[in-house]
Amino acid sequence: MPFVDIRLAGSATREQKAALVADITQSLVERLGKPAAAVQINITELSTENYGAGGILVADRAPAPLSTLIREDANVADTPQ
Image (cartoon, rainbow, N blue to C red):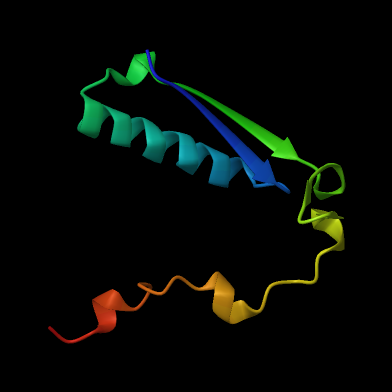
């Protein structure tokens, strides 16, 4: 029985969490041959005021530039083959 723990700094919508659960469950079914009913997933949302990294609270960090938030391979489908 696979157990998956996900910790998020901040929060996600109910729809986002439902999609994560569905995607991760499907991946374990496909990749490990586990029955979907056996997959257990726990999502913990951490307040950014209760989580620190690099000596500061995540809540006190400057916002990341947009360019660092965009995956490098996001435009792969747009690239001619």
